[in-house]
Length: 113
Length: 120
Image (tube, each protein chain N blue to C red):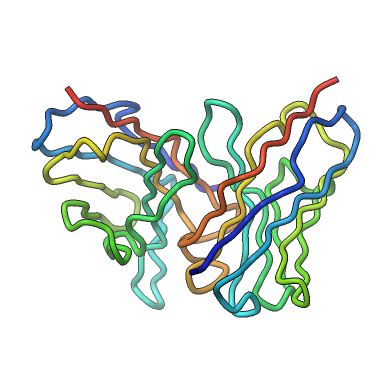
């Protein structure tokens, strides 16, 4: 199974500051035939289902603010929030869909300082 | 608009069965792979199972293999999860989710979830 390891577990950032979340996979999720990283990021607010933010490691889902960006390739990935807003308080998960069993990172809780 | 609505959760004793449903609307059900993902209380997300757009391929997490069965009914636009031999560790909110463009893709649409509690 591909193990997804997120860091940090929690993050406290001031409004307007940058937040960065890391995700490392135990094996590459880059599919060589199409050069795509099978990696997504989700945001989950309390009492709500997850919401897709980023897929293919760096493609922003329609309607997602451009302060959210994804980067990385192979086994190391990053989700960045360029200027944290109050509504960004949530838990963020990375997810590999390269192979079954599909797996998620343990989550990173983002709070306001 | 596209929507997923789960139902069928509840409190069940260990060893018993439960069937979850996920009613689909607002998009062509037969074009999409569908998954079940669960979240134990206060925990992270755990993928449970996937079924291909045509129902020909199904895959399961090891933790549920042999106990859970994913299926779909195109006439009813509904996804199912038959859960047998339930264990306390199956206690979770169960979400149905749509694969964005295939079985190996991100989940772009989620239901609100249905809660399953396995307890004597």
